[in-house]
Structures are given as structure tokens and as C-alpha cells.
Amino acid sequence: MMNQRVADITKSLENHFGEPKWAGGGRPLNSLINTVLSQNTNDKNRDAAYEALRKKYPAWEDVMNSSPAEIAAAIRPAGLSNQKSVRIKHILEWIYETYGSLDIDFICSRNPQEVIDEFMQLKGIGIKTISVVLMFTCGVDIFPVDTHVHRICRRIGLVPDNASAEKTHHLMQSLVPGNKSYSLHMNFLKLGRTICKAAKPRCDECPIVRLCNYGVQLNQSSNQNR
Ligand code: SF4
Image (cartoon, rainbow, N blue to C red; front, side, top):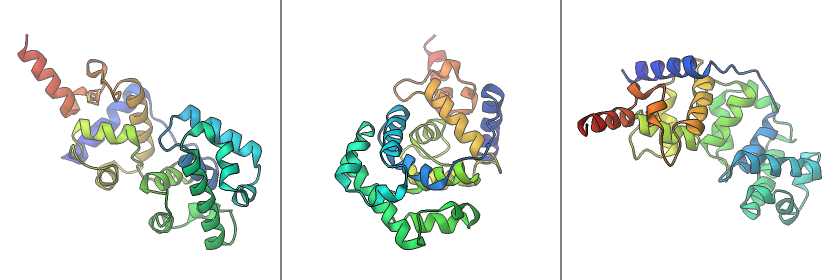
């Protein structure tokens, strides 16, 4: 029953926003560092920090061999730069020690669950981060739960209201229709940025209002007040 509801939501969002298709892209290490930079900031600041980092250090080896203070100076726009610089350096060192190089393109041809288990040993890499890398750069059919997706899943009632992002990730994997993770993730982002906003959802404009607990309750209480 819940699977059917998620299938209906996926279809309704595709009808409304279009069906996003994964076009392939990028290298896993670039995506990994980009995702670490994105923690607790917006896309604009993340992109500014990433560009500044790549400009200062065209090769990842140079970042690995640099000091956290030097890295922090480059990624300042992303915020929490002292914490993120230590994490990035540590991640690069761990990759180099574990795999013998900083080329991790091979993770796209490995078993995704093994990749998740290995990378989640690292501080600063949670299930969201590694799922983003696997979905965006490798095209794996995995459904990352970021802040928009987490909020929307709880409002709709697909997961309990008190479910953590990690719990939401695990619950949603079996609910999303096969080969639709990318489409639903991207359309939830669009919905979260334009309609199901954090502060005040605009349920009267929402294409999935009839499939959402929050939207249905809101409609019922406004009908009662008429
Ligand atoms: S009906 Fe409202 S709460 Fe539900 S998904 Fe749409 S905007 Fe968000």
C-alpha cells in the first residue's frame, strides 16, 4: 500500500515537473568532496568553496599534502571551514592509504553496499554523502535523503514524524519504485525548493496534496472552519 502511494507520488511529480533522467557524470572523488563541502550550507556557498579549492589546488594530491589551515582558507565560503578542512584532508589520506591512489572511479563498478560500508567508516561521511556520490556519479539506483527529502517524507507521512534522516534513508529504499530513485530525488528537491518549503509549505499549489497527510489534514481543517 505504501509502495503504491510512493509510485503515485513519483508519477504525479513527473507529470508536474517532468521526468529527470540521469545523464551520467562526474568523478566520484570530486562529488565526494563537493558533498562534504555542502554540509550545513547552501548550493551557492558550496560551489564557491569548491571552485576556490580547485583553483588553489588543481590536483587532489596537493590538497592532501597541504595543511588544514591552508585548506580552510580556500573553502571559507562553505562555512565550518576549520572542521571541513580537517575532514577533507583525512578523507584524502584515508583513500590514499586504503586504495593506493586518489583515483576512486572504480567504486562505480563495485557492489554499492560494500562501497557504503567502507566509506561510512570515515568520520564526516554518512549514508547521505555516499548515497549522493553513488547516485549522481555512478547512476546507482539509490535514494539519498537530504534535508529537503527528509522533511517532505515526514510531512507526507511516508516515514514516522520522528524518523531520523538515516532511518528515513533505510525506510525509503524499499518504497521507491525500481529505477526511479533519481527521478523522485530530483523532483523532491524541486518540490522542496519551490512549494514544500521548510518554513511554510504552499499546499494549495502542491501537485501531490491528495497523497500527503499534512496536505489532507490542512484541507480538512480549513473545510471545518468554513
Ligand atoms: S501537500 Fe503540503 S506538506 Fe504535503 S508535500 Fe505538498 S506542500 Fe508539502
